Length: 148
Image 1: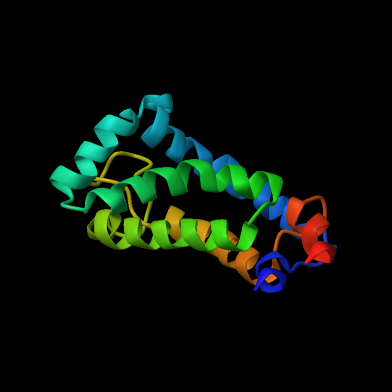
Image 2 (image 1 turned 180 degrees about the vertical axis):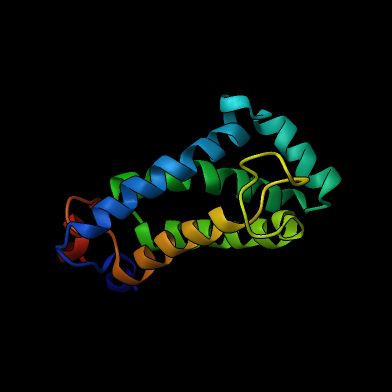
């Protein structure tokens, strides 16, 4: 099991994917957990998920923590396949439950009611590549491969 979880190549391309995923996903997690970048913080986000979206409390917590700490795990390349799969599931859920009704495109010009789901598709592409290929070189996972 550990070999599958930490398996990766010595390639540098996953490093680029990991950094990119961190840069675009971490701010969204920081909004939800810390209230940074105009977010509502843990309490506000939890309230929205459990009140407005009617999610069970445990699911709300997992989403907030997954989108906040998952990108950090990706950045250092630890538990990369697990973190990438977890964030991809969150992105799919967000696309289907919160953004699908707004169409495909990001709302650059304010012409639609909300944001579309194109960001989520791009994020899932990055994340699925990491699930399949692993963390690559310069990662904790790469350094753990021989230990199991």
